[in-house]
Length: 114
Image (tube, rainbow, N blue to C red):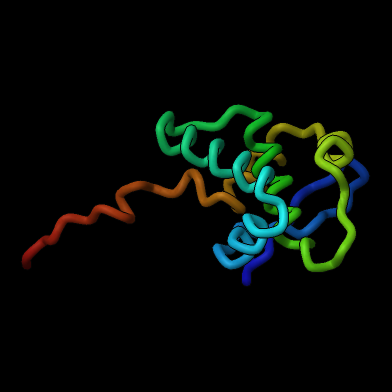
């Protein structure tokens, strides 16, 4: 499982992952949060973009997926208050975690005969 850094206001980083196994575990243990993730995911797929609060909420889901087996974690409101206010760092963390920003052409390559 791959973990990504989520930057916090105090300069520390928390772990985050959107590994499918971790998301499946989250769907079993906190179905409401998984529904939030799924709704945001579908909106991003439909609109091709995420607002800053949606990015922050995806970071929270990633954080929860990374720490869900540790038994203790911040509530979403605590996490959002502790998250960095640097919008550029939030966008970078979101892009790394969610994979957004990669060229779509990587998935749809035409076959070029030589």
